[in-house]
Length: 272
Image (cartoon, rainbow, N blue to C red; front, side, top):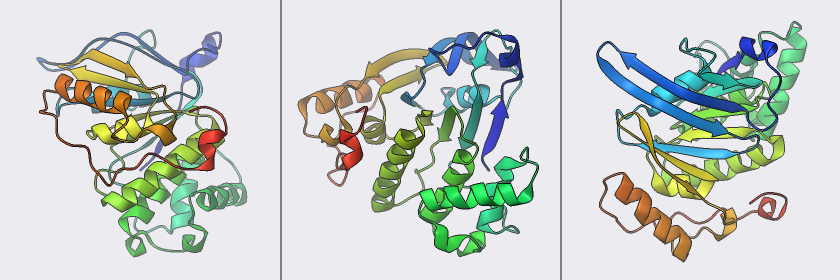
């Protein structure tokens, strides 16, 4: 399910308007296995970051550190405000209806009526007003993932963490979900970090691509093109794609012809 965390140590620090997350010299080990090694990473307000890497490189461990799902030193991982998480599997409670699943993220809101009203409003944003009373088993895969996004969004986080949320969806549904995430990101001005294995997805969505390799940040790229201009044939996108695949140790292949750049009027309203 989606999780919401408020950083308690942020109450004792002066707010940092330049970053919603700051990681310094962060390492994680499980027994003798070193998973993360001296990670330094900043995420700015409203920034969209894609985290890539081979299986076992530490992507999910880093996400868990940012989400405070694991205990980490406050001196190494500093978060300003709220974080929320949506995972690859929607993790909806099958014995609760859609509206109640979303409202679970608002347990700190005392009045049940207020929780349900906010949940309904957020479900409207993801296009599911007709599914408020549905059971999770009655949803398609794309609908279930929209509910998961609504649950992560309803608390108005400053940083939303997405752990491969679209990997189990078909190609057309993924395109729809990409557009939805961009619309929600722009509307709410939150920062997003998405963990993904899909280079084309990262190029379509993110402002910055970060590659983990053996627990270290090995490469970063900044994507400044408007999202509507990120066609696979665009020279800058094609060149960056080849570099990213090489850094991942993958032989370059032709991009997915079904992946189109994100086309919507929101590309002309604010940041690229």
